[in-house]
Amino acid sequence: MRERIEKALDKVRPMLMADGGNVELVEVTADGIVKLKLKGSCGCCPMSSMTLKNGIEKILRQDVPEIKEVIAL
Image (tube, rainbow, N blue to C red; front, side, top):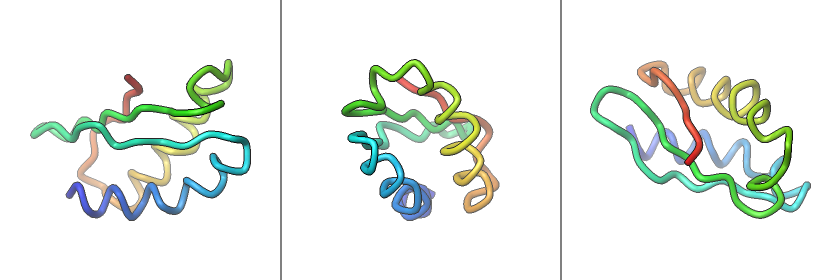
């Protein structure tokens, strides 16, 4: 599952990098929780929670339906 998540994140990274940010996959738990770390400008952006839930999580769940939740560390 981790490899599929990384492939899905590769779809999101160009958008994040365009704004000076990036995302790092930290952990995937056995119960389907994906833990990410937003980096660069995304790490301190006030809109990061919306980016995480409405952008990153949506794409990840489309590509890897076993995911239950995406959280930022």
